[in-house]
Structure formats: C-alpha cells, structure tokens
Length: 153
Image 1 (tube, one colour):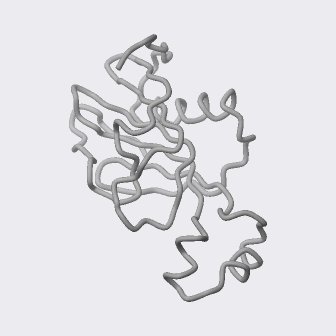
Image 2 (tube, rainbow, N blue to C red):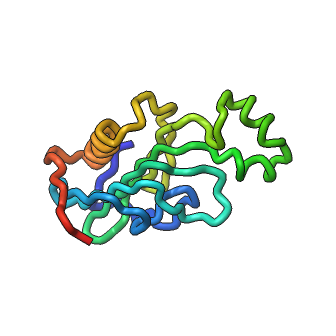
C-alpha cells in the first residue's frame, strides 16, 4: 500500500479493527513530517471486534490520522461464542494452546485494509518496532529515518 500522505483521508473510525490513536502509546517517533506512534496492546475503534492487536503503529500527518500498521491475532475467546464453536475446538482448529491465533500483519490507509499475511519475525520489540516503522516509511514514501521523541505526549 502506497499513499500520498498529503492527500490521504483520515482513517479514524474507518475500520473497527484500527487502533485508537491515543491508546497504549509506548513510544513516539518523527520521520520527516510524519508523527509515528508505537502502541502496545492498543484499544481498537470497534466495540465487538474479534481480534487483538498486541503491536501497532499509527501515522499522523498535519494532525490527521492517515495510516496504521498492526500485528493482529484472532481472539478465540471472543470468536467462540459469536460462531457457536467451543473454545477448545477453535484452539485445535487454529493449532494453538492459548487464546489467540497466529500473528498476521495488516495495513490501513486510504480507505482500505490490506493483509500482508503471517508475521514471520520474533515477537520482541527490538524486531517488531523496526519492522512496523519500515511499513510506515514504505507506505508513506518517506526516506528520513525515524527519530524517537523523548517525553512527548
């Protein structure tokens, strides 16, 4: 997904599964004119979503929320009663012991939602943060390296 950040429409509320822009912000970065917020376990826009987003970034240009990239997992505890399948059966079907499906990468921007498939990296912040930042830079065509903003709120 490539977006023209100056013409991209704001995405707040466009999809129930996008992260709330001020929820669980752990770090902030600037890359050119893009403010990037790294979220850990952010609340999502929708009320009854059946996914969890343990890691995500949101991109803001000129105060507009224009892009998000998330590592998402199906929430089997929420999914089970909605589809009438016992939790244990879902765990067996998904091949997991816990309450969440395998991680996958999803991009949001320009009124679209795009799945990039399974997340193949390790779930460690020293791998996740650079990966998510690279998705923002690539999608918004920014060449400046992100610089962390200290004590910014």
